[in-house]
Length: 234
Ligand SMILES: Nc1nc2c(ncn2[C@@H]2O[C@H](COP(=O)(O)OP(=O)(O)OP(=O)(O)O)[C@@H](O)[C@H]2O)c(=O)[nH]1
Ligand SMILES: [Mg+2]
Image (cartoon, rainbow, N blue to C red; front, side):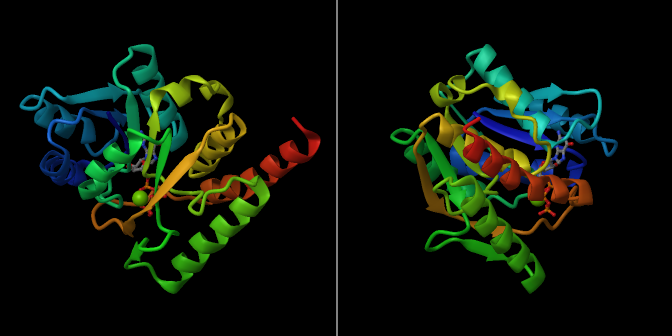
């Protein structure tokens, strides 16, 4: 099952669902929408009326990327909806055409990461500033957290549900992309093995980024917090 958090992604939904259906057939999709002012939820409901494998978790207001992913994952675990979950963004940054490969790898690997920083991976239409920022953030995150993953901020990630049941999701509090590092850090500490495969990441073309200073600061703080936890043995 795919978990896709959405906030103001109205113009991406139809194309996204079309590409997922073409690449991965009737793979169930759980959208987690935070009452997007642009009517994303009505667009999801419109498509849902003709596609029974689309589900919508509608939350009352903007609660953040991290909590949207957590709520989606918790719903799948509590209701036993699937054996694996794959989180992906709605802005077409993560090519749906790679889903069959991700699903295949999830048969033998507990956590599968679509990685920009293994051979064959990369990012399309990123300027030099964005490349340096992402590469620097990853290098710093890997070093401080000690997690053996090349792409620590990857957001196209698949998990077998069994490994998610072993960790305390409520203890994961990050809201922005730090959530992605915190998940990997927590899973690593629970003894989980990771598999990375290359993806080419595409910058969004429609809709607006939700990246903010607050999210950046949280992302800078998390590796330090993780280092503190490693040193103190917490
Ligand atoms: N439900 C929910 N979804 C969110 C929230 N913030 C972001 N998202 C979704 O999470 C995904 C990632 O957000 P983006 O805005 O693409 O953030 P980003 O990828 O760091 O930024 P860009 O690279 O500029 O696109 C998208 O599908 C968003 O719609 C939120 O508060 N609630
Ligand atoms: Mg994005």
